[in-house]
Structure formats: C-alpha cells, structure tokens
Image 1 (tube, rainbow, N blue to C red):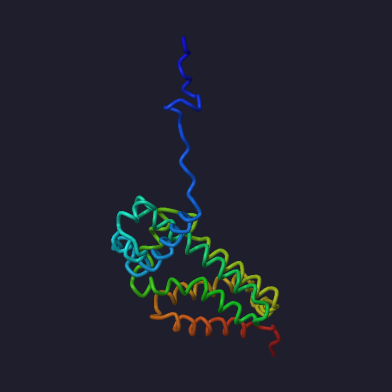
Image 2 (cartoon, rainbow, N blue to C red; image 1 turned 120 degrees about the vertical axis):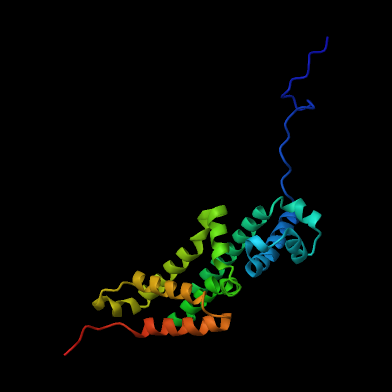
Length: 217
C-alpha cells in the first residue's frame, strides 16, 4: 500500500508556495508608477487624488495600476519612499560639492531638499501630505529634515563660519535649525521655486555674514 503523501512533501498539492519575487522589469515598473504619483499627490493632495488620476499619470489603465498597487495608501507610501530617497541623494550630492563655496552648497542643499514641497504648499496640500505621511509611515517624516540640518551644521562648522557666532552664544546647530525653520516658513509663503531660492539665499547670506567678534568699545 502506498503511504499517503506527506503534507510537507515537495510533491504535495497542498505544499505552501512562496510568492514569486518581482522581476527586475516589475520593480522598474512599480518605481516608474511611484515616481509619476509624486507629482499627482503634490498637486491634488492625498484625499482628492483618485486611482484614476494616478493611473493616467502613469500611462496605464486603472486595472493595470491595481496589479502593482492594491490601494491608494500603498502607492502613496511607495511614492513618498521614492521621493525621500531621491531628495536625500540630491541633498547629499549638494553638500558634497566642495567646488562650491559654503553659501552655494547650503543653498543647493535646501533647494534639493525643500523646493519640491513648494508646489504642495502653493496648492494647499502640504499639511495634509505631511500628516498622511506621518500616519502611514512616520519614520519617513523627519528623515529628510534630519539629514539637511546635520549637513548644514557640518558646513558651518568646517568652514569656520559658526565660530563667528560663538561670542553671542549661538552654535552651528542653532544656525542650522534657524535656517531650516526659515525654509519651512517660506514653503508656506512663496509661490514658486524661484522665489523660494531668492529668499533662502537672503537668509543664508545673513547667517553667513553675521556674528559678533565680541570686540566692542
């Protein structure tokens, strides 16, 4: 008599099967869809964006979109992850531009890091996108800002600019936090990336030209 097939046997019809790993082409397609979704979410916000909007932006049908992302929340998280990775890479690249003087390096980093959110602020979607990101993937919310402030602090320290502020009790971290707060406020006031750039340049110029040597009569 033939013994019954073991449930763990490779030939058993009830053997559990691992889900197939996505192919390189599948990963690339998901990334492309997530990249296209970034602009849609920035323009319309999370709540007002529909799966139809996202499918059109990606150039596929709604049914095709569901093959890659089951829910709008899943696609939003993927889009935010792609945006965060891209922004962090661009910010690090700006700080690494040792061919640029400190003011231009700092401005380039702020542009790379913060300018993409100017559009969301103009359309009134910034707070909603931020709160949605915190709710769905809280760890991403502060990742960009932390890298930006750390980088500005390093530039101010390494260039010796922070030394000029020491007599008045301000550290490189204080200055970096101040510039970051200025940037955050500007995102809610300006109407274009060009205006953001011009006003951040002014703020950076003030910080880099300021300080107090402590020599008073």
